[in-house]
Amino acid sequence: MKARQTKKPKYLNPATVLLLKQIFLGLLVFASVSLLISAVWYITRLEAFSIRTVNVSGGYTIDKQAVKKLAEAELEGTYLKLIPKRFSYFYPETVVLEKVSQFERIKDVEVERVSRHELAITFGEYVPDALWCDIKDVKECYFLDDQGFAFAVAPDLSGASLLRYYSPEIEPENNKYPFATTTTDYQNAKQLAQYLNDYGWFVTTVEINSNRDAFYTFGAGGEIKATLTLSATDTMENLLTLIGSEEFAHLAPGNFQYLDLRFDTRVFVNEELPVSTSTATTTVASEAEGEGEQVVE
Image: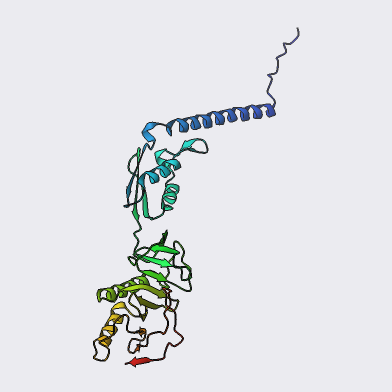
């Protein structure tokens, strides 16, 4: 009697098993990624998470509708063709902030998401405080704010409603300061001009240099040479001491060439008016400077 032969079980080739596992794993990953992408695509487009309103406030003369239009333009489109830029939790805050900040006259921009549906943009506005003009072309000027910062090109303005500053060593340029120590020197120069105006000596131009000298020209003629290393208060006190004396009580714009107040304890007075006058609005050193000069200690 023949013994019954048992069939040996067939096993898949190990390489085939590995390939099938990899295919299954790949399909599982693909399905998971596809599901995740679909979920992200769907959720980020829900109205509950979309910015629908942009509110703009601040400034006085800024076109708020133009600012709003610019901000809304930056909210259009998607990231990687997947997530809308209007999605509340990934809106392009930095880009919106930079774009709005580029508007002329705008400063201190703030962008805030006040709710899932609303974006608030607030800003301040630069206000002209003076003019910074090119010494070679007095019609080419920039507006300065109250900190001495050039923020916009100024139109060709006539009259003396705004004090004009000149710097022979620095060409006027937007987003710059004409002063060596920026705000500190500007406030000092501005304060002395105000003191002189309050006293009735009306300043029309101020020329400054890298040595921190400031030359104040009066509409009626004559100039005061001052230094920004001294405070405006000290300089004005020196002037008042000078014209408070009997000898120089007659001094007023129009009857002197210059008063040099740069040396604190000494004042140089030149009452000899130039033989010829220049039509330039900036300070020009006279060839005869020093002649006729008196020193007051």
